Amino acid sequence: MKKSVFYILFFVVLLGVLEFIGRSDWLTSFQLRKRASADSKELRIGYFPNITHAQALIAQQMELEGRSWFAPRLPEGTKLFWQPYNAGPAAMEGLTLGTIDLSYVGPSPAIMAYIQRGGSVRVVSGSAEGGAALVVRQDVPARNAKDFVGKAIATPQLGNTQDVACRAWLIKNSIPVTSTGGLVQIVPTKNPDQLALFKAGTLEAAWTVEPWVSRLELEAHGKIVREDFETVTTVLASSIETIANRKALLTEFLHAHAELTAWINAHPEEAKILLRRALTRETHSEFPQRIVNNAFPRIKFVAKLNQESLQAYVEDGYTAALIPEKISVKDLVSLENPETDSDSGVFPLPSKILVFLWEGLFDGSILSALWVTLRRLVLGYAIGFVIAIPLGLLLAQSRFMRDTLGVLALGFQSLPSVCWVPISLVIFGQDERTILSVVVMGSVWSLMLATENGIRSVPPLYIRAARTMGSKHFHLWTKVMFPAALPSIFSGMKQGWAFAWRSLMSAEIYVYILSGIGLGWMLNAGREEMNVEKVYGIMLVIIVVGLVMDRLCFAPVERWLRERWGLEK
Image (cartoon, rainbow, N blue to C red; front, side):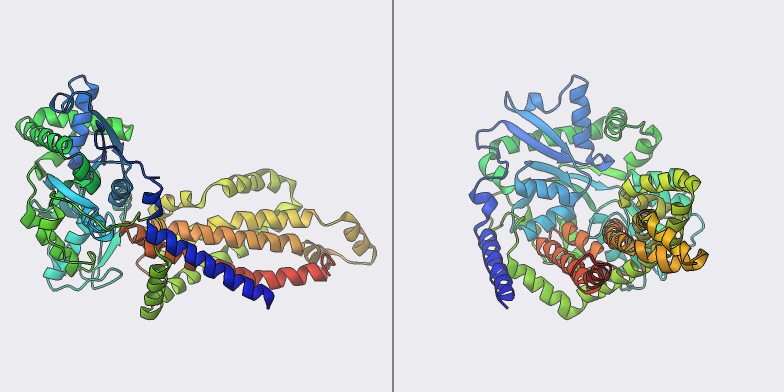
């Protein structure tokens, strides 16, 4: 009873402290964010190694080749620091936390950051339009929206610019889609995986952006069935603190950005060469000039933001339930007296986390994801168990197997389970087998090695005594050796379960599977939506599930084994 009261008081105090931290915006109060002072001559700029971020790439390449673009056009002594990112949410986290001042980014992450961080991010300029397309495999007879009913379309990321455009196109053509289903399955799939799956013949269509449109077309022999030349693809976003504190420097940078954009449009051939060199440097591999040449005409580089197109995009995102609020683009691009009520975006209020959990339980989304995750976990672990135990017994009896399969098992056990995801995707595609194979590969090796270690750790005296009393063969294994090794085997089973759980989370974060979304996918979706309450809420669910499984399943058996073998009173 006293212990229960202690636990209750401990968690009440902990929640109170976290609520205080969240409401006081602890990071800002103690100035732990990396902020530049008002008179700083530093500009930290985010970008992606992508053709649609050409201004950033070409400017860096020019600087490396000794003909800097921005330096002569900015105040003397101004230093530019370029920070590459691989996803929009990461760049927006950099803006809201103050690690960068500006970023080239797709409109969707900028809009989500504006909504989720209380207006702490603003769009300050245009950058690129177009460059996106719907590509299908040669053998897929689909041309219009209705042809995709019953099929799947891959998009780079849930809620990103191409994902919103794809869903809006289907909805406008009277084809209902949801974030997790509908008549057409929208499958968030990273661009490199799209290319690999296209080549493997396991992906039917993809709505993506350059250079991946050209790579799907030229390398995977895909067919373009729809192109979008008007949609805003890339914008230049800034934090409100940069706007408020260093508006003069920001204005001069925007002027230089506009001049660079005009130069690119006036010198396309030279721009293509510089862009290819920059992409080769960024990707650490020779980037084909033909990809750049094929992609360039599809993209319109602009400095003036098309507010009408961006407002239409907001409307489409709201209709597709991927943008939570219908905002005014005029507010999003306003640079006058920016104000924000945003918090750090790192410490959410516990009360908001509890609200998310309550709503998720009430609408069934968390329970549904939990069921999908546990089903995959149990099935994958069971398959791994059935494979591992016989192989572990074989390792214990054969020196040759220990020197071959045993060494292989040790190597694979040290390999992070997420490493199995790309190869599983190539082999199985967007299929349940991809998830299960990762879970199996994450758990089977520890189970196998624990079984082998348990059998080999049985005291020889037990075996000699059993043989003296007439025990042989099957009886010796089932009545003496296996029971004696059971504590070690059970310890391996517990470790294997933990590895299987971690492997499943890695796989669900990385891969969207049509047969159902799990907790790992919800966790990653919360990060992409910049919804920290969702991230922390799902983390809490994962922790609770792990504790419940240990207390209800493993702890009683472990306690019984220790008592049965005289290891505990």
